[in-house]
Length: 435
Ligand code: HAM
Image 1: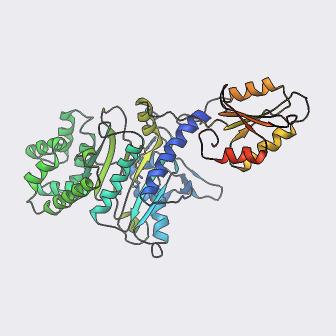
Image 2: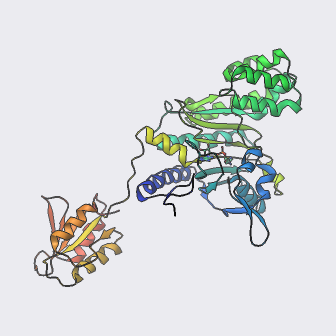
Image 3: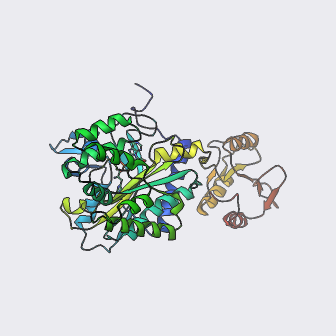
């Protein structure tokens, strides 16, 4: 038997679990500030939930099988279809806009590499029932606020943003046939990673003339002001430019404009996006996308639910973990005991007084440990030091005036004459008492 997990899967020893907990806690803390409610769904879903709408790439990465009841099933590779199904099923009853988040574990049979595993946890933040671009601005500001909460700044991370409606308007204005748009999208998606000649060839093969090929290849360097000045009056483009201008104004008011960069090469791999789309990247270009999302106004309807506009993003734990680690911003460690209870003198008797003390402290919500066998006092203390206990409580039932001593360092013993007094002190919000 191998002692390793499957490729692309992780063991979370307490050290790694502490890091994961730090990431989850930060996600929850920020998202709750935006008044989102947490939900979850099944980790196993009908296969067809993904084959219909997620797009080819995800379907080739599915962990799917036939279950014992002959159903074609798949482990969830993403949360959005489950979310859309759940909201669709109760759409009438839910207060709109729906603002929900989840932290599911997802499974994709990918080629494992830096930033890509076969399972990951992904924060999903989604809004349903609002078509206004203010919802898009609110959504992106959450992803950015999470970066801030991790200790990152706009010098570390930027949000690259595009709008599929604006891009479609541009393609249509340039006279590119709708049947060629998918090919143009694929080229834009790879523009940074693929030699220019290869991109040019692919665009020509999709039927674009030489001039249009050049124009599309130039999309990678266009900022929003240039697009607005150059194409803002074109009928196919005007309304989309105006909407995007409004979006930027909202982002500015929400205090995140400095993080945002207009970028027509942000296409997103998933098939269901219809509007503004975005991805967060580290500024050095060292890591894969930290997060990605956008507007998907047709998905609820096409999954058989009500026709409601929707938008959201997913942020995995892997890339953000790598980025934080590389910047020295991930130093979570497993919690040590707040108190190590020891009993003296070394009578060799069962440590009844220590056990009663531990129980009283635990009732007061303190994390308490003691040696799980009768030992001499110095052995008990040594075990507590190894456990990195923040304080020792030494119980001495033979002492009339100081049966409980609390030792936080060599120099400051606190003395308590009753268990109640000890517990009252331990319950106070000071450094060394609580977990
Ligand atoms: P996605 O771009 O496929 O979007 O994934 C979002 C994020 O999840 C990525 O940016 C990355 O951080 C992380 N991620 C994805 N695949 C892996 C992997 N194999 N290993 C590690 N991390 C990974 C979606 O999944 C959309 N459903 C997000 C969404 C929610 N759109 C609207 N609402």
